[in-house]
Length: 229
Length: 285
Image (tube, rainbow over all chains, first blue to last red; front, side, top):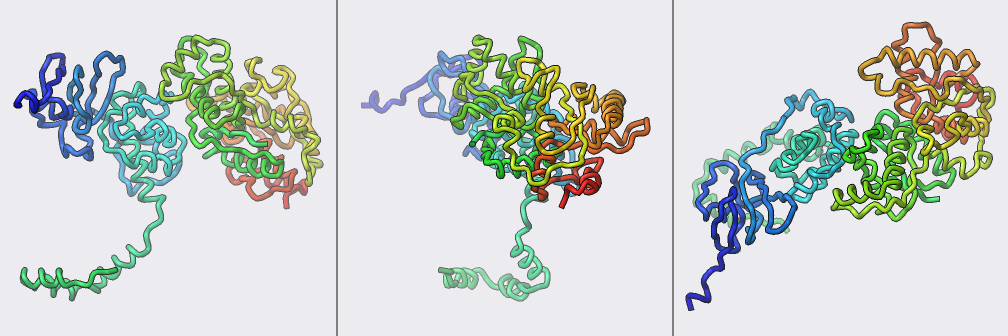
């Protein structure tokens, strides 16, 4: 019986050395099973933080692949390693001093003009973003499109690690989103009104009442609150 | 007529009046410009290195996008984009090995079949017939010279007209009612990107081209290239020699004026404002 439920083991090669690990683990867990301990290059382990960008090759395949180590299952015959960090050029700027002029991104990241549309960044992106398209949009000053296309970026840096033109896409996208958020998107009127109300003290009395309450009283108030339909 | 339209970077920024007036004109002429939903830089300057395929990816990828739209022609306004796209197109059409290599590199795209033709907007207008243009406001009394520069005409394989003796813009302007004078420097290079590092080279060119145009009686210079426009227009402020300000116009701006479309002329984006001249001639409303 024990034979039947025994986990199938697969062979992986970590930095060139062969290890046997149970099937079904992510690349990150397979490496940990093999004895590696991640101090850097690991974070949320849920595909959100972008800390665990990794490179690998599959068995009998020429493709050089990229992925998030915490999101990708290890397969038999995989060649694995970890990328703890991608050194990247980051422009220094004060957002308050920028504008939404079309030339703003290329003025801070002039190297984006070196893009030859090879699309290697797009192929590297574990989020399946159209990375090259947002670099091209940044280059032609279309900040809106650059912000929207890069919105789901996790800043893992795999694009920058693969780019033959030495572009740091994820910082470019972040700049586009910052400029877009600050100078292009309309200010929300209701937020301003509520902020003004708060500043004018409209909720001070209510707040004082709440902070003076005991725990039981607060619980009671919470459970008996009117729920908006 | 429906045709995919490849804008190019400058048409969205510094050459906005070129695009705006062309869009307005196209609506009147029944040319439906289908702006490409995805496009990248044309490659800006065709790479002459025969083994440098990396720099041909950008133009060919754009042609794949046209193919994806289900069309076999694409039009563009900027002379530089026209030149780069069509030269790269000719390169891969004539060299199946290079095309195969590039297709294999761009393995996330459908293969380019070589079936797309790049058509400059002036050629589209010529196909429709300049005489059929519904001119409402003829450019009477306005004397202009067409300026072709290099990119529409060279090399010969991609030339939109006779590369040595082009007449396409002159024919258009004559059909719009303007007085067209010939000009020995109509094919001269404007100095191109020297404008970045060697401003003086461009200033010298600009002075020769414009002073000669002035001597021939021209009141404005008409062209199709955002870089030529910048060099001939904005470099006038850096000239060492005396030169009366010469308005530089995109052909589409004069076309718009002649069709009575005055809303999107964008004259405020020029260094030498063409408005006083056109007003003096009674051409603006």
